[in-house]
Amino acid sequence: MIVGEKMTAITGSAQSAVGRRLGRSGLDLTVEACLAAIADAGLEVKDIDGLSTWPGFAEQPPGFSPVGAPELKEALRLKLNWHAGVSEAPGQFGSIFNAVGAITAGFCRHVLCFRVLTESSSAGKASVMGQGERVDGWSKYMVPFNALSAANWTALFAQKHFDCYGTTREQLAQIAINGRKNAALNPKAIYRDPLSLDEYMESRMISSPLCLYDCDVPVDGATAVIVSHIDAAADLRRPPLRIEAIGSAHNSRYSWFQFDDLATQALRDAAQMMWQRTDLKPADVDVAELYDGFSFICLDWLEQLGFCPVGEGGRFIEGGERIALDGELPLNTNGGHLSAGRTHGFGLLHEACVQLWGEGGARQVGGDPKVAAVAAGGGPLGGCMLLTSSQ
Image 1: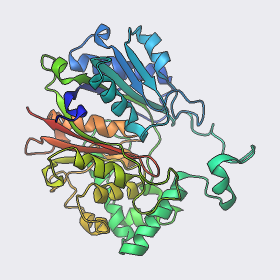
Image 2 (image 1 turned 120 degrees about the vertical axis):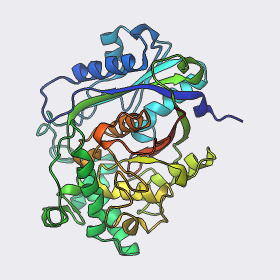
Image 3 (image 1 turned 90 degrees about the vertical axis):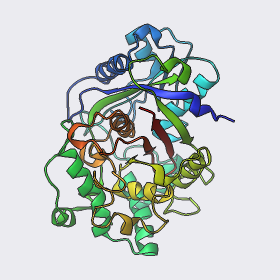
Image 4 (image 1 turned 45 degrees about the vertical axis):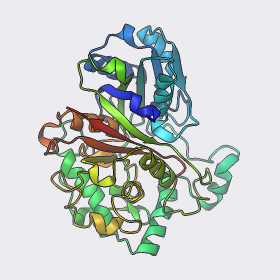
């Protein structure tokens, strides 16, 4: 039996300008990325018959999701057979998974998927959670304890890992240091200056054990990818990147703090599902683009995806050699969210496409990579996929 996602492929991918406080609207950036992705695939706007985004338009927090599917449909005058923009999905890649489902169901052939943020330009506009309003919903379990940020919540997961497995800050630092080395080769990256271990260790603490360099960089920017039916992809400009397998399962509590194991988050279930839907193994992966909104989440993905045993992530990345561009598992080759900017998973997906199409330039992984693992999300959100190239 051919699982549904194998009937789909990524046929185009592009980014808008990415930067700090660009002063451009979210729609402007989105249109730029989407038109470039359509052209990248060798399609025309009239060929797009599906549109998908996550989480859809949201007024709060400012800049987190300033454009929804209806607004982009009107801007591009799209004639659609299907569209979706919903927040209740397996995180950032929910729009990709929805597109896969719509294509395999026969609703559409070419789906334009996008993610846009203007968090840098919106900095300072957001209020602190629980300030000036009645505390209710899930926040009532956090605000009284001054746990106001995802940095606080993720720090708890990291500390659990440190306590259980002996992970150290010196080991975790390699996620940020490796990302900065790769960012130096990426013209779009926000931070490109070298980062030393001493600088990392001496930086200010944000929420112990996470320091400044463990936290991603808010930016303005949009990323778009085209997901197509494999039969419609053969004659396009790009060699199709088949979606070999996806992972979207979530079997634990939907919460930031009530998992059966805090050190695994929702990542474990998604990763297990993905490997159950393919004959490929972790050793077959040539490049990994794993969510690093916080450095610990990236380390956790390494473990849950089976690149090293659970509890061994710190030792796996120690020294940085294994995850370097010329290592056994090149990781976050564009610099990741910690240095290239918080493009919320989609930037990593775009980078996986760049690598599999052999267009990474100075940061291109050697050996003609054929398989990429891509993952996004943390806490109660988790989604991952394998992309394969036949070129």
